[in-house]
Length: 171
Image (tube, rainbow, N blue to C red):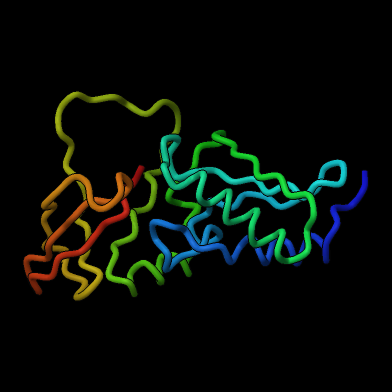
């Protein structure tokens, strides 16, 4: 195998990791856990990403931005691959990603439940854990809309401080 043209894989990973998410620009693709791998294959730098959900409309923009930034950093042959398995999970958001979302007034998703075996399917509404307010921390919040500016976020309002905020859905 031939190494990709450019400063090296560690530097390429650093460039790719710094790419902001176009829908949540306060966090990077690394913060969200979208960036899976940076490697090489037959002289190409290969960046592997996994979208937060398979229909994510920001995916083409993320791939373009990765190619543009890596090319500008000196990598001549950049390939961006999208993999859907394993599926992205909210557990891939880093602690820094959680911090940045809260600092921007956006509630990060709850941790994924730990289950063994198949996930049960129910047709009745299940009670959700409260979404704490990113402004005051109160658990007294209410969803006001199932969707926000993007399909991966919902709108909430805090019943304590009365501030509206977005919640990154636990997809």
